[in-house]
Image (cartoon, rainbow, N blue to C red):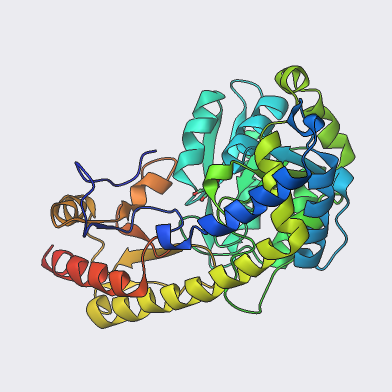
Length: 377
Ligand SMILES: Cc1ncc(COP(=O)(O)O)c(C=O)c1O
């Protein structure tokens, strides 16, 4: 994975470039508990090929979990098991696009989605965003100009900007997907990591209103290693996904992992763990906000994120962050440069810091190490 790295990881490194859960937030005991529940009831059939779209028991447990989260009924039939959102993005591109097609993305967007679009030989075109997410007028103009097959958005707590798409814009976007017949790929990786009571309409609740494919994952609310996620969509679009040849040959992806996660969902322990994560991340986001204000309040501009993992920092001086990144790596502190998140290598005076991977003390320490580097460049 192309993250800001050091030659070799050492104790004391603080790499805010890593957008992953921290080791202290990986509840290995809980995983063992889920697995024990599964093995105590498992039958030989549980180890056979799984149903193409996912085990019915898992899908039923997931539908209940999502219904509570969305405060709207989610049927198991609208869900399809994936190996996480990276897999979901690729699967949707495979099924709904062909080489040479155009996909519209937000400026800025998730940098590791770009290689997937490249694998599928798609032309990537960026559309500007503001504090309410992608600017719909500009998106509509781009749709008319480029006739895209797909539009990829991260509506909740975007990676890297932390911004969320307003409900009003969600509805407009869904409507456009119907009007102009493109597939709206909604990467909802961070939708459950909200640190306030404010919320927007879940994209999963809009799947019947347009060509919406909502992608969800347990990577950020449990552990990436399970490789368990889901697609939520309309029957019409799911039918095309179910016809995938290699899924018909091999059965569902992540059949085993999903059986383990199922026990977390059914026992209510996944929900409890999510609440625990939210309380930890609320502390971490505040720690990073306070540390940045204390050390770099005059050098940088940002909005405190209301969810997700990321701070998107603009350098007031509009200096290029390339040299700062080199210097920060030599002081064993990392971040991601903004240009990584642009499909056309713009955004040079932005940087992305993730607060998910380190404790509050480590966050203060890391920001204090970055401060002299940013001030002196
Ligand atoms: C926006 C976004 N999509 C997808 C992923 C990867 O998700 P998964 O682990 O489910 O493949 C990430 C992980 O950082 C992400 O930030």
